[in-house]
Amino acid sequence: MVQAELENFEVQLVQGSTKKAMHSANASSRDLWQVEIESIRVIDNFNVRIKDDKYDAHIRALADSMKSEGFYQDKPLAGYVAKDGEAEIIYITDGHCRYEAVKLAISEGAEIARVPVVVAPPGRSMEDLIVGLVRSNSGKPLEPYEIGIVCKRLVNYGWEMDAIASRLGFSEKYVEGLLMLMAAPIEIRNMVQNGEVSASTAIEAIRKHGGQALAKLQKGLDNAKAAGGERVTKKHLPEVIFKKKVAKAAPQFFSSLQAVKADPGYEHISPELREKLDELMAEFSDLELSSEQLIEQED
Picture 1 (cartoon, rainbow, N blue to C red):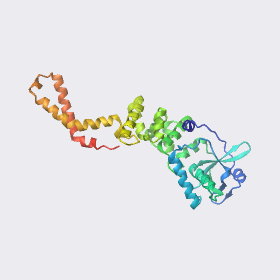
Picture 2 (tube, rainbow, N blue to C red; picture 1 turned 135 degrees about the horizontal axis):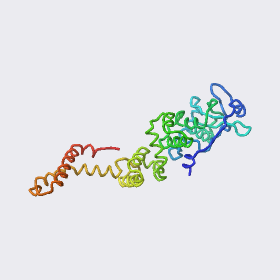
Picture 3 (tube, rainbow, N blue to C red; picture 1 turned 90 degrees about the vertical axis):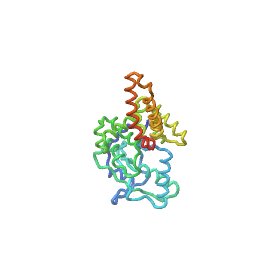
Picture 4 (cartoon, rainbow, N blue to C red; picture 1 turned 180 degrees about the horizontal axis):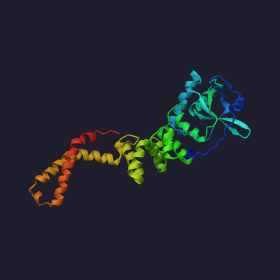
């Protein structure tokens, strides 16, 4: 599966000579390197973006813009020069969407011969390039699931969670949640990728229900579809629906408890049961006050 290939990415590159690579690519230099499209290569599975309908629409919109406006010089691609035998190869490390879009635009008649490229300085490692997918991203922001793939790659390189959080600019709790999602059953990950549930809702379900999270989310999806939707939100989850039903029933239940307490037979109930009923009345009295907030709770 493409998803597994992205998550289990394992590539090592040996940095090469920018000067030699650009000479081989017939590139010219102004403020940026102007490189022929044919000379730029893609590292297989390096890009963590999930290629779905939204991705295709994004590429389409970029290509249409390039056909009318050209390739914006202030939005250069980021590149990395690596050795491949005796050759020096320019690999793209940021701007994959723009790269795909310009190729599409050219195939449809756009006269774009070269694109601007900024090359990584000497000393950059593959881990640095992976971090750059988040920190140096100059285009469409990554989705949480895609950031999770970046986190998992860094774990595979031996990074600790605190180092990942610090380098990517996130909290440890956020990174922990993304890694929990990466380790979740494939069915949950597919639901996130397919847009049937948000990453945050899935992570919350995993934290709260553990091994039962999948069943809870699937039931939530059934509830969402029954209500005419296609996406699970908190209001569709079984426990939230239960709370809302309890909230709606609270006034009637509270009145019933008051009637029980007023009944002459109440005195004949065991002390233990009377104590429990009194506790319930106190709890439902508080619940009655907040029932409207629970009923109107939104995801």
